[in-house]
Image (cartoon, rainbow, N blue to C red; front, side, top):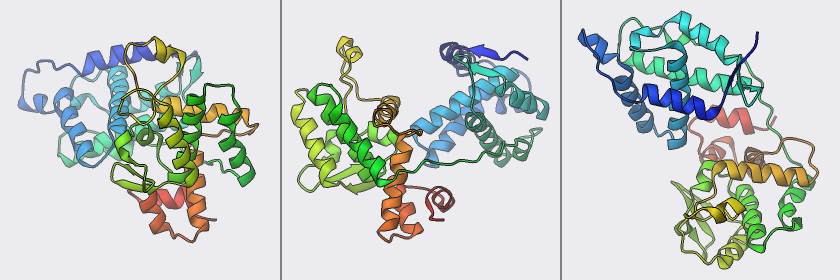
Length: 315
């Protein structure tokens, strides 16, 4: 069967425009209580109260909008097991830029849907499928690891590129910072100058306080000394497109991901290297220094120790 070929712009326009705007709901009170606009806003507020990041909430909103658009959900009572099953099949047929969704991305959609159903169960809303009817496909995650030689090649890669000095310093600082702190990309891209204490070498990211390595602090200072702007963001975009923009913008999470992938490829590493790989290298270094899993969980900011055991526990 031919897949559904969609452009991301079309998805965003059709799904958010159709389901985020409030519409009038007539009839019984139950109809109003189950109206998507009503319970979805309460649900997103619930996610924020649980401490989920703004990016995670945004992704949940996107995944659920895709489900609502496909299943033509007008009221909460329209959610049925048959529509969930059909949506699961639909996800396997979607193509974005002529490429199918990965199994992991499909599971993200179903996780968001299952989370919504669990929330609605807690609200004791009637005639809704149980959350357990949403079945995830089993995927085996094998995060890449870096040996010391490969790690050194990656960290040295920015200085070997023919880039402006400010770009070299920025990219070198980013790689050193990812390895020294284990920060997630979303947090790194949101850092501001005020987060850094140049004297003590401490970096404050949200509720986490990190001690930078000498290399990370050195290259951060080099980068900041080369900047002539007053923008509060710690990392800015310096590419050609940025020069054409009227407004200075901070470096996006996707730009950081591309940056890591580019330098991994240039360093001759024949494996997929992402910021998560550097986060894992950070965790392995701490384990090698004698930290136990509970201490590592705090360092990484995992809410559940199961995530720490799954990704970073020594075999």
